[in-house]
Length: 576
Ligand code: ARG
Image (cartoon, helix red, strand yellow):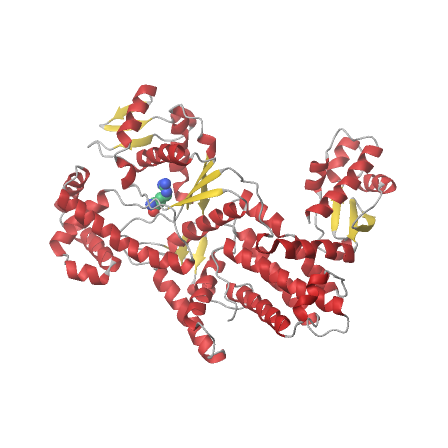
């Protein structure tokens, strides 16, 4: 769509210059002001004159008329109209189709990508569960929003480093060690994995309520771990391994791989150097034995660095991690994806980075997302009000398997497809709304396959694949190489205009850290394609150029959907 927006902006700019306001705007401002009219009767692109009204001291409608008298149309615009305060431009359908469709097909999988981030590195810190605690629906947000943000950056030319900042350090390990020695068994844990660790953790809490001395024991075991006690370190490593094995199964279902699993423990021995630097900057205060940084001047509570027993705190490890990452990756952005409950934590320590004299506070970004509840109730590990991701995925996959058994029992790679569709349904559902909105999660909604859902989108993609293979079998596919594209139905033109928006949607999702832009776009594209498919005969037309255009549109839709799925962690099976 870029080229035609530029053409239109040029025409508008030259008209604005003709009426004497050339110094107020440039082509870029005007390009940004162009809008897509929701109703095609109002044209394909519109220039609203409202912002000009104040400067020119005239009504928007009068300005539109003035500009209209000066506009010289050219290129792919055939005509324009003034309606109220708008100038509405209409594309030359065939001209637009020839250029746009050839462009999309030529770029193939690269269509929508850009090199905006060339030479820049972005670090994305996401998922990052706390080891030995359940990996549940509350973690879905950071995992899929984080991965989507990574994919969006990669697609836009950035070099990306995805880091799983595992919560693998802290007093919970003291608790687990105590619980394991008291009630645990090696065999049970080796077989039962993370579920058994979670049981131990939960049991610890119940027992500690009756016997608070357990907490002291846990603290003592953690201190031993911090000091390198060999037995405790072995246990701790084992707990992490067990947890990671489990997480990695879930990540594989989502198609996620991390570039680094350096968790919190990796940084704890890097904290003393950070403390030295803080001391040199004179920003540390000791209060009741705890070491902190006062942030009252900035309207925030103090940032806690060390506990009174000298052990490192979450923020201290985050600061050490940021310095390490800056040195190691020389990032131009480091993005942290967590729920909005941690916003203050990030605001606080980002400020500390500046107070320490570093100049990259403005390269640190916290991307928050809304809280998840289940049927109106808060998630609570200890009361069991959680839905484990692996259980959720399992239920979804089983539902798909059942449907496949009824509708398409002969399907190849049934298991793989069921996983892609089941998991895709959940991801799509989660990423449908703006990320900051709180979500009340219900299994029924997440597993609904009707209307605006992942399976609907994947089914549409599979439909494009089946049409393309039929086109290839019948030998008609090669018609698209002549590039003789013509528009003969409105559905074709509407679909093409939707496909033309992909690069802009990628940019908007990237800039707003907002994967839901892509999810909504997938729905628009799938809907436009299905209108086209139901309204137009694709393969059997008398006129070869009509068939060529329709095959090309189908292929272009498939390309766009596949790329868009990739941007939101959804797989694209060719057959469903
Ligand atoms: N492990 C933390 C949690 O589960 C999230 C870590 C986010 N990343 C970070 N660098 N603080 O709440």
